[in-house]
Length: 397
Image 1 (cartoon, rainbow, N blue to C red):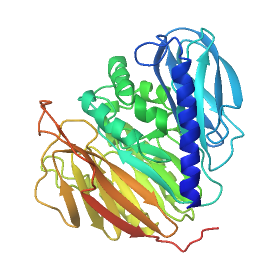
Image 2 (cartoon, rainbow, N blue to C red):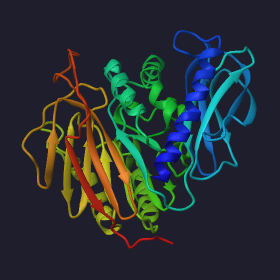
Image 3 (tube, rainbow, N blue to C red):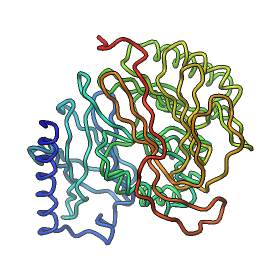
């Protein structure tokens, strides 16, 4: 009852700010953003702060106004940004809180109202979203991202292949089609093969520090006492040395005590995709670690469909329905629980005290193949829901 009342109060305050924005609009372009704002804003949690990121076509000064959603835009932080991608850290924030923010530029223009949540000090139930493979058909991605933006979630993790190729035009398409989602919650990606380990990925995203290229090729984040680990599964770019360093880091970070442990990377270890079939080499290397360290679930992309496979108690979920061309699956492999093809979708993951509930949320039916074709919107009733119990005793110190 208290949680619902708090949510209602927060919504009322946010709506009040939206009304003010309508009554006193900024001099923004048709997309609701200044013309010199190429991308963004978007947010992510780093070690001790929340980073607000955006890209500019010219040097600009301004101020970020922000504050807890239940008190309003009470704080401000001025900035002077050069042309290009700019990352502005907000520090000394209240843990476990929902914030609203707006960027006001010296020209008088401003961004739409954005939201982010800060990690809690102690465990409180929360929900996060997962999706992947948003490349190629960005109009489809806009539909999926728009549906996700309406969720009451703490953040979203992208399982790779954000773009078709790491070119400026493609990145602009991704950020434009995902704008509504990126404004509504923090965003954490992992590298897909289509990102090609390109410098633009590292330029665009601030991620929790860990290792590899720019210190963020792989990363980890604690949300209270829940552990999140993002990996790079692109062995062609890692090479033997990189893969060994990443795996050694992986074993160490998964040795931490945590209520639940979630791992994210692009290439599934196991799959019924008739052309891909899973990554046997990585499976031999990483699967035993996941089993030994009590990983709750592993989320991947790459295969443009939905698969839920259980091996040795570890739940492997492939979600490749974020907008890319959809492909059919083959015969089920060992441990297959559920599959679905030709469905644009995302995952809703609700984390409770001693149980995790995963729901595959369908957004639309779409034709298979490389031609875009017409889609049929769906109401969003989950096609699969399953629960996972805690692998370690709770509460965790």
